Image (cartoon, rainbow, N blue to C red):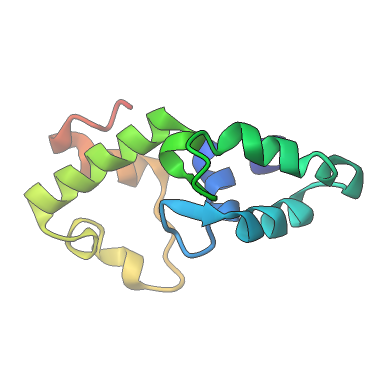
Length: 117
């Protein structure tokens, strides 16, 4: 997390380049090799085993951070119910140069009650 400014979901995005809710051992190892020194990477098998609770061979967002997974599920449910799609909820995200600020994000989420999370 130190390499990701303390943000759990930013760290997850390094692991899950495809923005999916699970990563394989190979993806995990590849991402960690980019983020950490070789000395730290020697511990990766142990770290993987500690994180892969169900021994599925994949690390899910739920296993990695249950709170973040729950928050993301709530966000997705609200977007689908209130706006239908993320494109409708966040129309400017389609532009490659657009960056959504934290205040814009909170403003869009205000009707959902999720903006304080």
